[in-house]
Amino acid sequence: MLRWLLVTLLALLLINGLWPWLRRWGLGRLPGDFEFQLFGRTWFVPLASTVLLSLLAAALARWL
Image (cartoon, rainbow, N blue to C red):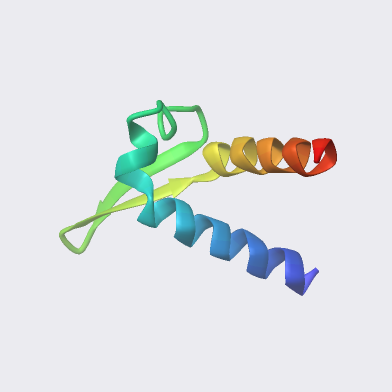
């Protein structure tokens, strides 16, 4: 359980770092993707995009 929590956290950090590039493809506008401002900074919590990218990665892993 702890391993999956760590993987999810790392995926969220990776997506947050690649956010400007992924936003051009339409990710981040899905229902379940949250954007809010806190302490003068904009934070993204792309839950639905994370699930979508995880499903695509799993399908790619099964295919290969």
